[in-house]
Image (cartoon, rainbow, N blue to C red):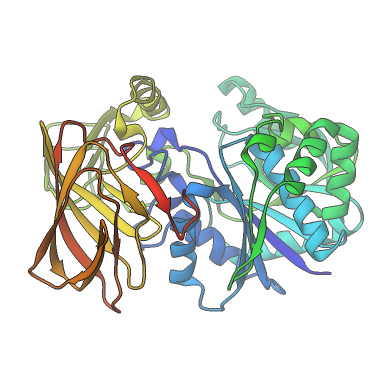
Length: 471
């Protein structure tokens, strides 16, 4: 019986702002070793015995970033399939569509291992042993969750009361007093949010406990186009029917009601990277308790976490602070308020401030662009286009664009003309002209774009043709 790891990659990661943004959420955060949380989840999955394919459920706007992350580390050329959601609809919807696809593509007896994209697990050997135990229970018709032995009275996690491998009950995030009681009793484990079951078993359970979710998900899958790519299947969920799937967590829809729930107790070095204090604990501390990523100059500083980018951080006479510097936003918070960073994210979103959604460097299917400077009636970008990649055939109503090629060769469509622009040459795109930029070469194309006009918003774009399906 095959094992299909299924990675759920979504969420905003609002407590890890300003590094985590809506279009660059927590799973894409790179750790000190250069790997992202998502990459670590993928490597953890493909290292398990017998795994030949990984299924990822994610937002369709993140697909190309995920594909890039996987390509960078997928030395085994493991097949990668995707279910692409038009918008977030919670974990029950994600698992329902994954189970329907798995049953159809691989059969009801396929064991699904549902993993989060933003967890860390330090002990791969112990993890593999826990998965093997879960597989046996799954093959016996159980819906299995993984319970992590608690190390402290943590109030940020849910708990499971267990009797052997039987789930007695699930408990939401408790008060500190209750968490201490749970720890002392020895009957409770942390709810890791990882699951294991056969596709057939979970579909049966969903028919019983949340039939409206499964019914709506099945109707959506029937209306959703599926394509076989070079690396695996790709299903783009139909937006109108997916919107009819109830927005409910898998724990509430199934696990809390399931009579066949089982738990595998494990000690695997598990961490749910949910805040800056959690992330900082992964780094070694200096003699004053400080943890630093990037370049920093510290005088009389104690118990602080500082994460910088291209700029030097100087700190003097402070304690217990979190300082996170990015090119367009700076976070300064007391360590005791790390969980409340989400309030800043929520306020930025309510105001429509772009820093909740995008970084100054924005990833696109064809490459990236970085805003270098902007002001009234102008914006300057650095654009990088991957070899063989192409932007859409598009038009802007309100802005003119000047393109200067810094390195590589550009193939340009400008109105009725098609021509090449080599390094150190430029071209001009007037407002209202259909145009397209393509990199026909084998090296990266880098250019500077100067926009001018009355309105320079990213929504001033009309796409006529696009190889990435964004028209």
